[in-house]
Length: 86
Image 1: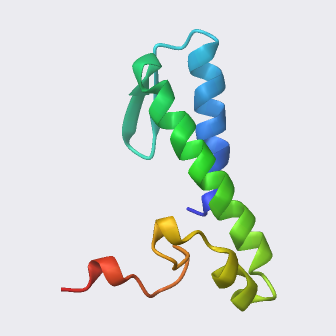
Image 2 (image 1 turned 45 degrees about the vertical axis):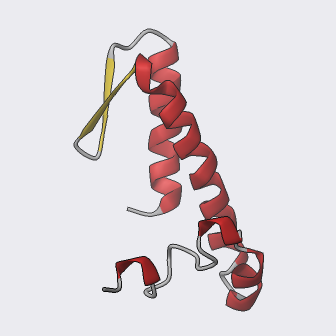
Image 3 (image 1 turned 180 degrees about the vertical axis):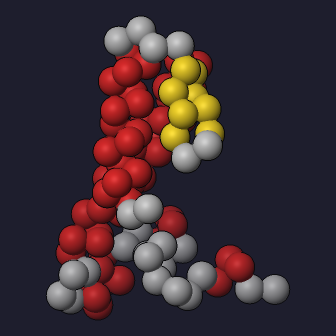
């Protein structure tokens, strides 16, 4: 699932929870109204990822340079993930 698809699902879940739904399921995980803050943070992070995916479509180096260092300096859509190395 792409970041854009997940972002759409999270935005829909937030709207449904705010309009009275008791529980929403996203990719086999269940979220309730008590999880709204978590969903909002996920939405913010995914908005950044979708933006950087769009920026990197033709110019990968621009996206790498713009990717926030607080997130490790490496965009999540790359195959290199230093946090997984042992």
